[in-house]
Length: 134
Image (cartoon, rainbow, N blue to C red; front, top):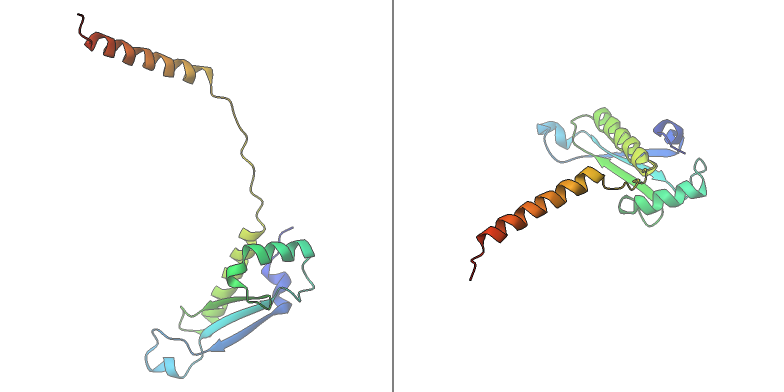
């Protein structure tokens, strides 16, 4: 049921703009900030079940129109930011569709119960010896 970046690459659009941060004089001339946009509502590559899962789990990254937005401006180059945005999308998709195994309940072992009771008896005996006899 997993989904990869390569499958949705045809529906993804990129937008670039000038980013803040390091870059010196170059920062005012080059558009190195990359914004990835993927319209989940209009996507034909995912099922309705996958769409609901994405909309629920990634609601903080999705606009009201159903567009997933991921932004990167950490690298000085547009290519570096574009690769980082695609990696982030891949991680998001992987974590969203990861099936979490349910924990199996196990019984407390007999030895553990016996040791706990022995320690309890020893403590009680020590406290009993501390008491004053009247």
